[in-house]
Image 1 (tube, rainbow, N blue to C red):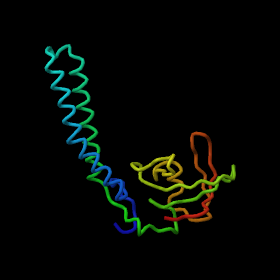
Image 2: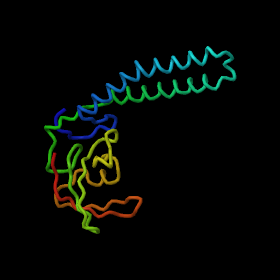
Image 3: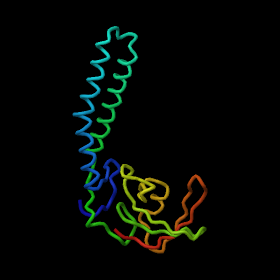
Image 4: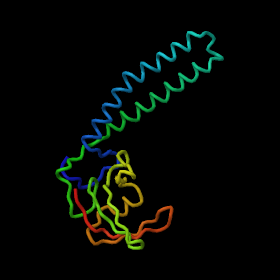
Length: 164
């Protein structure tokens, strides 16, 4: 995918690495996860009366949750679009850009990478483009200042640099 001009809300933008990780996880859940749950159901069923068999009920509930998780991940994969990281513009904040900001109240610098919600990892410095900070920074340029309402109050951030 060339540079992202307009974000399609139905698309889920992922890096090639994250797409591969998701595909592998779905494959493991389909093969090993389903096999393991089916085995637990069979073992519980072998214990006799199913009407009062808590292990059977728990295994069936686990099966339902597993199938829901697989379905959600398959839907995510079907709607995913791989971001071509080599075409990421650095003149303004967008998905996959790294942005360095200065909190003008505390004089503290932070660096974030703007990512999709599926790749967000705040402790790893990856914030979702749909988070309050991510939304406030999108399409801004170096030198721009933004105010962001967060649970702890209002942040006043100045964009110091943008990169890949």
